[in-house]
Length: 216
Image 1 (spheres, rainbow, N blue to C red):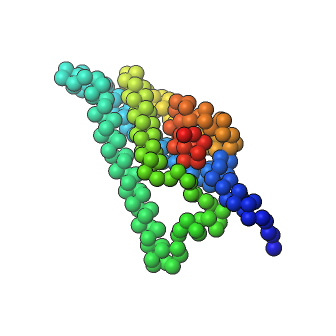
Image 2: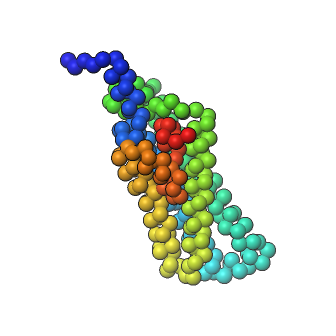
Image 3: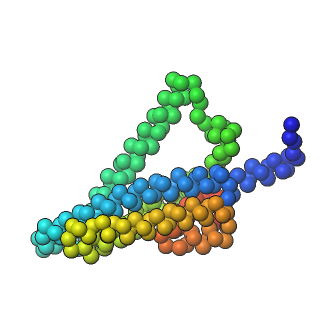
């Protein structure tokens, strides 16, 4: 039997929420995966759509009455609606699965169960403000990479160059994703604060660092 003073126990519980802990890594990993899915699928569609219209000369007809920015913004908003709906359906499926497991398989899934296996996902700053920050961060990150995808697609002259254009955006997204995971493992508060302000990387880091109290 191992025992410890109460103050030490409280301190260990609080450290579960800090950078470098398993819980912090899991939250960063889950958030980064959501952002990656949104970015990769949406930007590849936008790049392909822009290049196809250029290759078929359709864009020349459309730009007679539509500004280039409005044309690109229409693709971005349409893709955003589709991807957000897809994510909502995904979360709905997860919620239905949890309810089904709790009600029909007698295997309760709760925060206490996750905490029992060492996964403590509670943050003190969780609330409406955090939800708002997460949503705004995801939308701004989506817009940033979508515009980059649109620019990359506009630089292509034929369908054979789609792969190179998509790879540029994918590389930037992968760089931000890997940096977020590595910084969450290292657990340096100063490094996380800097990355929270760094373009591209901040899309994957800022909401989690705010939730854990690293940044205000």
